[in-house]
Image (cartoon, rainbow, N blue to C red):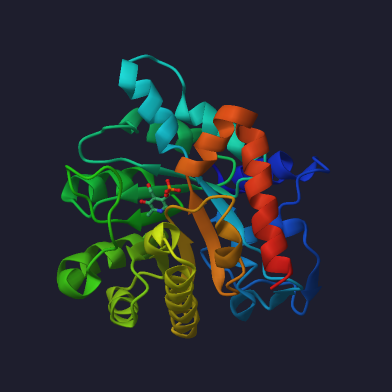
Length: 305
Ligand code: PXP
């Protein structure tokens, strides 16, 4: 698809709904209207406006983006081998309700998302595809062919229920670096999913990846107030450190409308990727309402931080 066409479709898809307050509607102080976006993907342009060091455009409040993970829609479909519900339908509904991107994790065992889901969504995405994957040759090849806006590399174990723990980038630096460099060279932004640990952040920087996604699972699962505060402190420190290193900071895992505000208030966090709790909320109130509520909690927390 020609790039201008993609950018035009994106603008049409997000501009007419007064209830929808996408990040690019937030008023900007324009210092220099000519962004130095270089070979930036058109769908990333709005998002990169948040990085005012690069663009010269300074937002009043740094927006926070919501990436919606639709894997669990596919989990329900695969449980019965039916052709419903369709994760691509969910992705398009989430976009219309204000999602800034869609995550699909194509696991090696294909337990939920299938190759055709990724291909179908990539062909009609109005926001951006964040392709979550293990760093295997098969997945790297697929990602290079599909060319998502983002890839997020995660550790994967066959027996796990969901992604457990972050990548050990320090140990895997030599094998991750060529893949990260190749993706970034081809204008596919790479994020490594890591625990909030300075040594992992330093190793990520060395791989050539430009994004980290901080694993918020320990924060979400902490059972006492003190333990939660401790996990929050680690995430806050890690986000500030990574931002200083010039990395874009995302976060996710285990976030719900009840625990998301403290994470959204961390000023360096750019995007939160949320799946399971959103789909659970959607059971009772529908996906668009669930997405709108989550985004509004995130935006309020950011505005008040
Ligand atoms: N980010 C990553 C890297 C993940 O692996 C997952 C889980 O698939 C999520 C975010 C979303 O986590 P949850 O489904 O708990 O919201």
